[in-house]
Image (cartoon, rainbow, N blue to C red):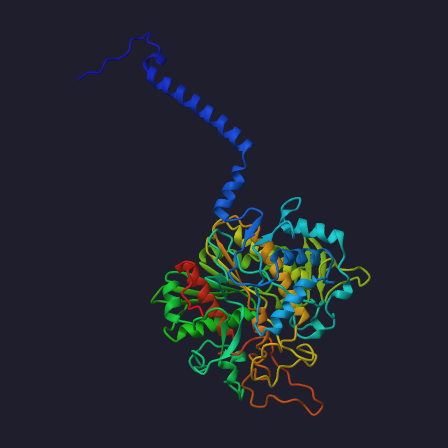
Length: 556
């Protein structure tokens, strides 16, 4: 068969009339569609509607609560906003003060606050400044106020944050905390089926711990209280009991099954390591993992379910350098408070669950940098006559906002982030290096006995503020949870190693003739001990997320 060829005078356009007419129709139709779409976008707030549909909030994050509490979250956020603009001289409303006092007298450890909304207009996030960055908005804040250098901790003390009076940077007259919320329409939080996991009390449990110092080979010696000779064991026999439900004991098989094929990462300082080792000890009772770690991170692999537990050291959660910077000499840590720590951020696309925590390193010597300018420091400030713009407490809050913002805006992270709240210490009568002690504490404080720690309260408050400010900037599909353990663990002065920090048979464990206590650790937690409860909470949060928000725990 032979195909006919066009004549030498034939027009190319005449060969394809149908094709050209079809193209003309399509182009005309597309033009009409674009004109119509432009009119719709100008006339209606389509972008806002889409944003609310995917992320569950526009300017307000709805937080429903099914139990009665009288402190309003909007009031609390307003208090936070006013505290930021007025420095550290906290003026907390009388209504909040009365409600906190009422909860104390009721004998319940309560970290929840009532209210249906967190109103962003009450406390504008610093991320909504002229250029949308943390640095720009913090700079706007500090230009409108100066933090009195007298409000910063005693510069002669280099101990851990919260370690007694020497490190306090002001006191909060009363404390209310924001409840846990999710950055997506599915809100993974503390309040499910009427149960707030963080409101409750410690109850005696004679069943004892799920592991011992002899059944966990990865336990750091400083937290091996029984192995180091601590004579009492009752601190191991207490369980956290939420007021309206039961928190199940840790089920290692359940955890591994829920996390099948997934990775959980603990990111933070030595207290984060404390929690990671607790998790490993709990899981080790059903399966011994393989060590696949390296110099960059600890990594443990559970072959039966392909679960990986990771730990990454990030003491500040923000970018740190030691090189000279302006007037700050080499060797001093410089913290770029508006830049997240790239050391862990590089890995987060590989993680399914992140447990983020920090705070105690902000008592150590460091220089604070925002927008490439030195704005403050801890145990370092070259000009005493020039007040700092940012002290260590505010630096902590900014660092939390920076880290949370980086996670919830990361284009390749869709997992669950659990921000564990500030872990209280119990150095009574001084700081870690000025005679503070937790020696002889053998039981939790009873309801009503908790003495408020002003430094712990304000660190917790700044952490909540940073969390909320970061949450408001969420753009990805990840989930975010605030695991609020601070007040509940304020009752556990018995859970620290104290003087039982080593195997040294000659260590001093009693007060001297002059009454001075021996060197001790009242910051980290004995293992086994109260720290295991953190991972029971982590398991319950993960269960609610992976199995849905219907709570399976029994209500009273």
